[in-house]
Amino acid sequence: MTEVIATNQTILVVGGGISGLTAALEAAETGKQVVLVEKRPFVGGRITQLYKYFPKLCFPTCGLEINQRRAKMNPNLTIISMAEVTEVQGEAGDYSATIKISPRYVNENCTGCGDCTRAVEAEFDNEFNYGLGGMSKRKGAYLPHKMAHPQRYVLDPRIIGTEDADKAKAACKVNAIDLEMQEETLTFKAGAIVWATGWRPYDANKIQPYGYDRFANVITNVEFERMADPQGPTGGKLLRPSDGKEAKHVAFIQCAGSRDHNHLLHCSRICCMATLKQTHFVQDAWGDDGKSTIYYIDIRAIDRFEDFYTRVKNNPNVSFIKSKVASITENSENGNPVLHGVDVESYNRDGNGGYDRYATEYDLVVLAVGMEPSVDKGTFPVDISINEEGFIEPAPENGGVFAAGCASDALDVNRAVQQATGAALRAIQVVNRVAGTEGQ
Image 1 (cartoon, one colour):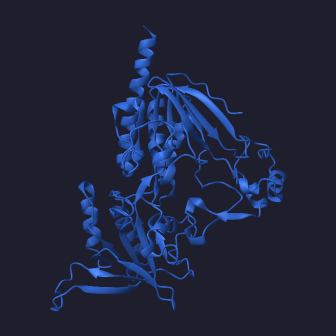
Image 2 (image 1 turned 90 degrees about the vertical axis):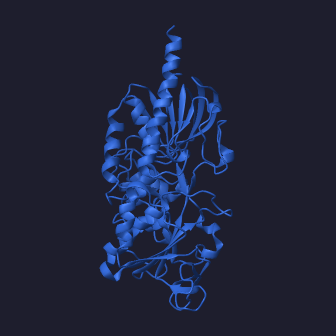
Image 3 (image 1 turned 60 degrees about the horizontal axis):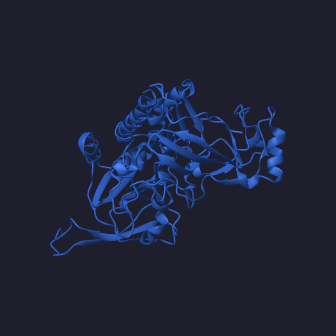
């Protein structure tokens, strides 16, 4: 049974991605008691699924390892994974939070040996790799990823009650498999709350003209990121999901579902930079044989990112076409996606007095889908100010609840960390006021 000792001077952090982890660590390192609640079996969020950051093209693993080490060493921080906040009552300085904890079916005895995985036969789409068109599977007993924290295996609830569950239990030499685990409900006090539930990729299935749901060789930017990672489903090889052939000519479609009244109204800010970064993956994989074409409305690379954009633009293996792609079809003979549209910078280019229409084939198409809040607007368990795009607005009526990172807006990692630090400071101020009042 999970136990949490918390008071109205405890800070609750909801979400264990980079923003939630940052806010929790900053608060805990000032001496505050912090409880971090994370829905997934591990903390670190979506940065754990990135291959490289822009613009330095460095790996997230170093910063992730540092934050995990800070979390392990801090006695003020309690992390509860596989948990969701279902209800919040009260006011600033005096909240009562109820959380639901899903069973992991693996206890603290787990040594991370992997014997349970080897014993289990059932496989499922690997959500860590976004499924990737069926290219990525995981076992029914699994470690979410190589650097997962906590470093503890999970049993998929779909194998509970099957022979596979019994096989996993029999294979475990340290009695870590507990098939009797049940869902728990836990209620505890908190003085302030940092809401850091992050973002999710926009559902490309909703963008019907682009055929994500019909054409295997149309994937999203988050799937492409996992494909490029040597720890990913293809070992870092850029391959077509349809036939496993090399993908050397890649098209990137910007604003796929963003800045669109039918989909997301907002600009997600990171999509342009993510695509500019991903052209390097194509070049790294195939050298001068790798060609990238970016279809864009406009490129938003501001501040320190301008130089990065300029370098990519000067690369002869990367082409830019100013166009909102109208539709994608498929060449049934070779499985190539075919992009259709109009180059808006082509007017009278050949003296024809009109625009050039294109119908261009590629090995692979990558949709730069935008970011939307992970929590649907109508499902927040706390009364809070939310804008039409689903992001939390800073407002006095939010009381002692403060948004961090991408719960507040679409942000890159650097800005999300800065914003989360500010949210932690505001939460600390609330519980300090509580302590001051009680000491009078």
